Amino acid sequence: MAPSRTGWTVAVLCGLALSGVEAVPSSTLVDPESTFFSTNLIAYSSELNIDQSDGDLWPTTWADDDNVYTANGDGLGFSTDQADFADCTVSRISGTPETGLSGVRLAAGDALGPIWVNGSYNRKPTGIVAVDGDGDGKDELYLVVQMLNNGTGDVAFNDVPAASILRSTDYGVTWTSTEAPMFTNYVFTTVFFLDFGKSNFQATVLGSDDSKYVYAYGLDNNWRDSVDGSVPDPQSVYLARAPISSIQDISTWEFFSGTAISPAWSSDIAFRQPVLHDTRRVYPGGETVDGFSVISQGSVVYNAPLNRYLYTSWTDYTFEFYEAPQPWGPFTLFAWKDFGVTPWFGLNTTTPKNGGYATTIPSKFISENGTKMWVQSNWFVGAAANSDWNYCFSLRSLEVTKYSPSTPENQPSSTNLAMIDGTVPICKTAHYGHLSYLNDGSTLSEDSWDGSLKDHDRWGYTWPIEYNMNRIVYTTGDSFSDGGWFASNLTVQIRHGFIWEDVTGLAVSPEYPYDSSAVPNKEYTFTFDNAAGDGIQIIGVPGGSWTFTSIGELSVYLNS
Image 1 (cartoon, rainbow, N blue to C red):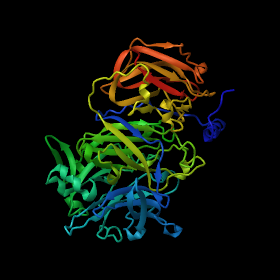
Image 2: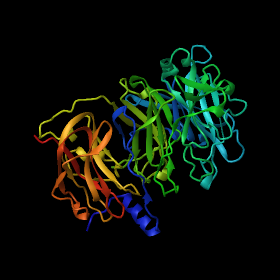
Image 3: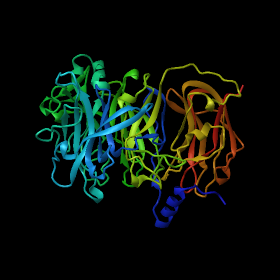
Image 4: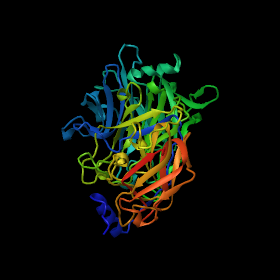
């Protein structure tokens, strides 16, 4: 009898079978289009939670007093008193992930500003910036608060008709609001500031004139896919700027309206042009018939050591990260992380794996060389699988390497290239978040079950530099009654110049059977003509009723 996937997955699958719910169709594999980074590695789960915090969203800014200021939605912030629950709370965070983080609650609810829209709406924070706009030698804080539908059922969280900006001159203790909402009629109502580092200082990279502004990105209609379809899903990201001395005065704002030789700006919001337009959808046929749109409330941070602007977006099941050379783009996808359908695993389990929403990268926590960052994101109790969840200030690591052309290297025939420093495993998704199983020297099994019906599946590696290769050894993982093997068209591809191409002269020993007899723990050696590249993968059509594959190990060699 084939073993079953352990833990909550079995219960989920049995529940699906008994209730008649079908698997979610999945789109094809997504290959990022950016050529700036050669590798990226995002942790499969949250790694550092500030346990005394409570809430979600958490946009951040780094002020001149060296503290991080943030705001959360629907929670206590950094309080343990349940009476302190509020729709929006402002807090101060001290420390770093390496030295330890702690927070203090500063203000919340009506003390921040009014709710501008009648009916079932409340305040949600979307962006915050620290800058000395009045020239008194210390930063003020500016917090964007949107009016988000907080009704029950299908309408909850599905439209944003208005937003405005609040101001604090005492580092978040007291706040003043505008007399009316600055953004209305569902236009530019999800706003997050471009994070230019401590006290907005790195805006100087734009030149003396352009550094006198704060820059802000906006979405129309909703903060993410509107599941109920009450408003159009956001598919474009827009850019605006405001003088640092008049951030609350909408009449002084200018909106990006295109580029010729240099960016153009218009005081009329109707003339704005998107800096990013992405119509892709993921996981169609599930909660939404056409799938989730990929543009959502996140953050744009300037990574100064790499001189790059990073926009972090998400869907219910994926991270969608983009990079650009300028604030106005062009933005291209550089990382796509697929966590599979919920429920997920929390940090108190042996196999933590979870995605999240409202993805942000705090500028204070970027490493000196820019290659390591921390992503803040949240997931909630409804997405948990008998475990904890990170409805709190929560971080996970993101590591990147900048692409640089290289001359292919040869290694001794005994060298397993999968074990070389800098190797980054890749896949469609890892069910238990154990990508390290591909090259840990053991045959512990990982699989790609993600609750969807996939037309392709992959396992492989990318590297910062190119290597010569002509042999891989694929050890299959566990066997399951509903999948674990490739059903057809299994081949090997090499990445060169960011393009994946089939190898030539491919042979496999023993012959791969394309059925359940391919598993468990069977070893298949693929040989091919010498090829050079900075990535390699096995790719094919997954088998079984749940269309997934398993893996125990993937080794890569250059025969002498």
